[in-house]
Image 1 (tube, one colour):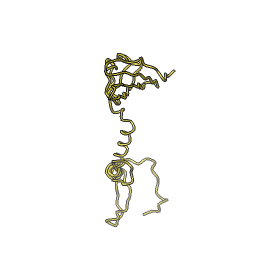
Image 2: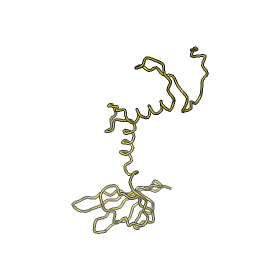
Image 3: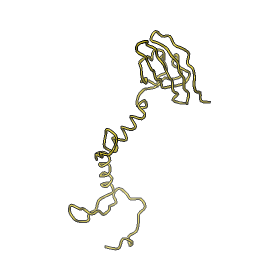
Image 4: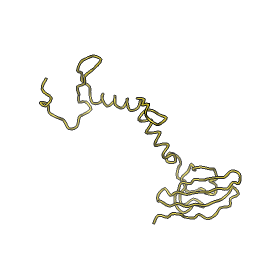
Length: 157
């Protein structure tokens, strides 16, 4: 076996290339392919439990997925619709659709709609957040179908 400095270097290993490892259980040097090493790393990333993670899921992949889902919950919801009436969006919370600018009673731009509904008076506050621009508009209404006009509080120029 030569000195370490006598070996040539390879910039990018191939999946079938071998590397040498020391097998502590068998107390011997052994060969492993890069594919074998990669599969071991993936297994550790997906299955190893790390108690210090401050997420419900204690695996690396599970923690990342959990953080992404919690940060952008509306991105996994909704399909774009262009034929609905925004006056019918009266359930409280983030609506499960992305409303196009052609929707009846839209603020004139494609948007996510968030409704805040006060249950005792049925007063509704809607805020429309543009998904293709930075436009923001607000309006109020009620379950009886009475709505104020949309007021654009920010319009992208």
